[in-house]
Length: 205
Image (cartoon, rainbow, N blue to C red; front, top):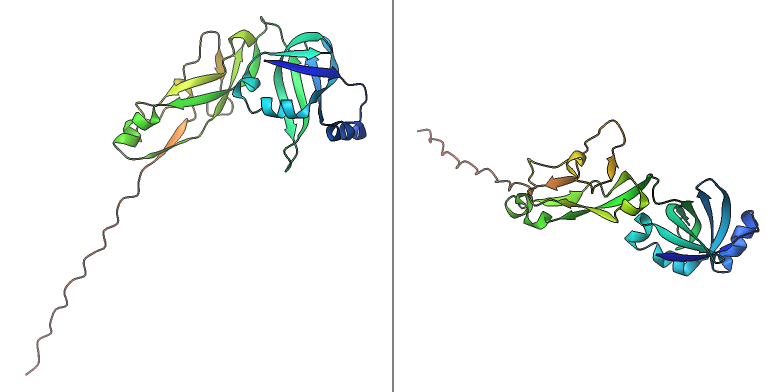
């Protein structure tokens, strides 16, 4: 995926504000032993590109005034309530250096699992992306997770995810094997107790 950018010379909050008003998004490129470079990118094309999953996980060709660099997306900041990109960061990479990045998990076959077919449960993903360490060329767009054997008594954890060759999944936090999904079973029907028939009291003579 290619991105066209222009070197940005003006700095400061006021300059960035004027840039956004003109339909551009400010950004920066850093890494690979080179000085950081400030850039500007057409806002609308960047906004639509960010909706693609591959933009977040693939190696991107960033063209800055005719000079191309291999980069990966490192950070993007959005306006709190407007559909506007405030700033974007890219990191230069080479094809042999392993870098840490986020990769989406794509769950498959949940509708065929015992949890849904037999138990009539509802499956909700708890983890939607993972951190991986891999060379940019080996970083996948997503990692598939097969849920065909899922049941309420057999819920897979992060360590069950099979990463492609050359890709290492990084577990954060104290729990190195958090569960991937939750299974909510239908509530058992509550049977109202049958009221006992009133006993007739013997009439006093």
